[in-house]
Image 1 (cartoon, rainbow, N blue to C red):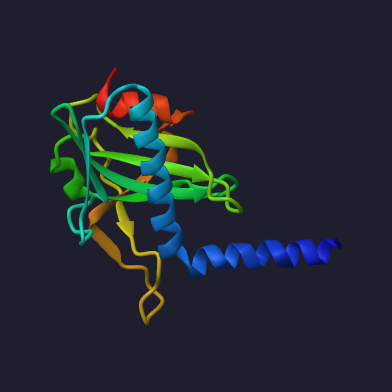
Image 2: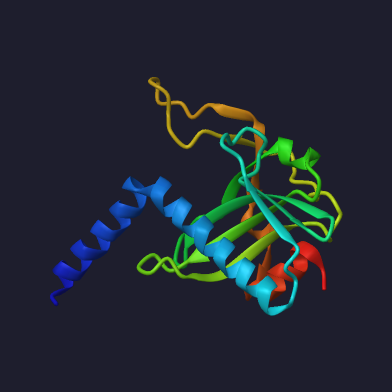
Length: 176
């Protein structure tokens, strides 16, 4: 392939991620849950419930419960080579039992999750402080201004801990 054709193909793949971001986010959530449930199965930890809200109002995407431990989970994601350095986290997640944020780092071609970034407390503990930097909307209004999102905080990637595999993530969520 010529360099121009490769660049055009890469640009088209990136455009698909933007255009079909809702589909991609749903696929990643299902891949994550499949990997987590398989890890729990292998560890003989089959007492798990997965709840998904219809509305993203409470600052979380999923509620996971295992052996009496509840985790309200906000999922974030970015490509392996992404230059994203922060994410927006809703402050309501701070009030949820076992609130945590899992940042999925994935291969853009296959959607394979390559690693995880973790922001959360020990099992049974609340989400640690997420700082006071107010997040802004990603899109500008009609005047070209990116308005503040008072109930969201911008949290740097450096605040997250690198988790290399699903088994370590399972332990962060539920211990053991």
